[in-house]
Image 1: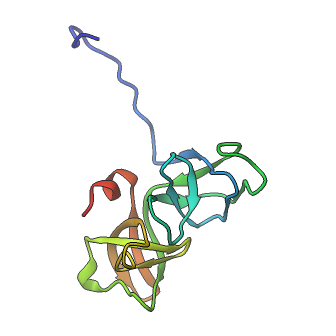
Image 2 (image 1 turned 90 degrees about the vertical axis):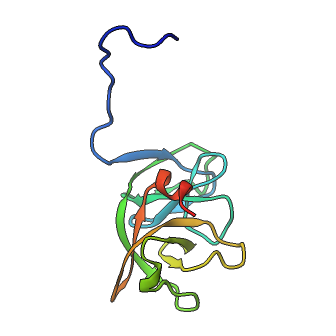
Length: 143
């Protein structure tokens, strides 16, 4: 397709609400850290490889009896509070760095010797846990 030669009405997505297809066998609870797997489907946060954090589940979804994409879940990128893994804690020094998913409500400072996927970027440490910036594009390019 050639370059523009006149104005173009380029549509934009409004707001930060998203909707995504859920992987087969997944049950996702509202508020859960959700991730995208290598085939593009959404799964709950877990200690696993080839996942990337995308956001917080806005509603519960149960695809335990379904195939990939049979249902979808609304989710939202942003900064959300998750538990800090006590055996591999995120610290104040990790602010601005990647943290890694342990499960759908817990993050850790390291990849667990190559067993965990990137959850998001540490925004701040809170007395109640870790505030994690969940944004798929940011997390994919973060070191």
